[in-house]
Amino acid sequence: MHAFRQILRIEARLYLRDRPTLLSTIGVPTLILTVLGLIPALREPDPNFDGQTFVSYFAPSLLVVSMVIVGVNTLPAVLATYRERGVLRRLATTPAHPAALLAAQLVLALAGILASALLLIVVARLAFGVPLPRHPLGFTVAFVLGTAALLALGLLVAAVARTTKAAQALAAPLFMVTMFFGGAYLPRFLLPDFVARIGDYTPPGVQALLDAWTGTSPQPLHLAIMAVIAVVAGTSAAKLFRWE
Image (cartoon, rainbow, N blue to C red; front, top):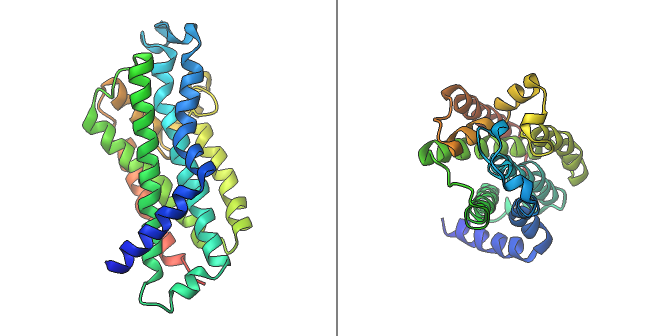
């Protein structure tokens, strides 16, 4: 436990020093929300969104941005870089098991995603009158399972990528697919119905987030699929992961 705390402290310092990554992880979703919120027409209730404003409708999809950036881009790249530079191999010769570094990276990834989500929710509420998630328990469960699914996929990429370039090459299509089906590139109402339905069942399960935000209990099937993806991808990553 002492070794884990030491590694977590060191990794946290490195994480906080990387200002561009830190700002993009935490600030980009809120920046997009702010730009959209400054357009008066997007703050008007619209029957196409069940009487919500576009900003309220789109806010859950913006949660996807930080989740995907951290889980699919940052986490695999960092771990692949550490493997390529021999950091994991050197750790294996010390009392600090490399698994402690993996755990520290997961803690920091989760902290970054949570910070981004909280900032987005607070700014959306205070600046643009977006209601807080109306089903807090369902929202929390959907958020946790969606995040777990994406982090597990990120670990799977890190497990099979031997170099940083390989991790980036594998992560790029996964990043685009999850962002697209998550409604981050185009609002979901602009997507064909069958495409939007696919997005219901792909990480991070944006429909469950949207349902909980608007007060509807997330569908158990959506949550179950996120849990299955997290378990399967996480287990596969654990079996495939090599420290060298």
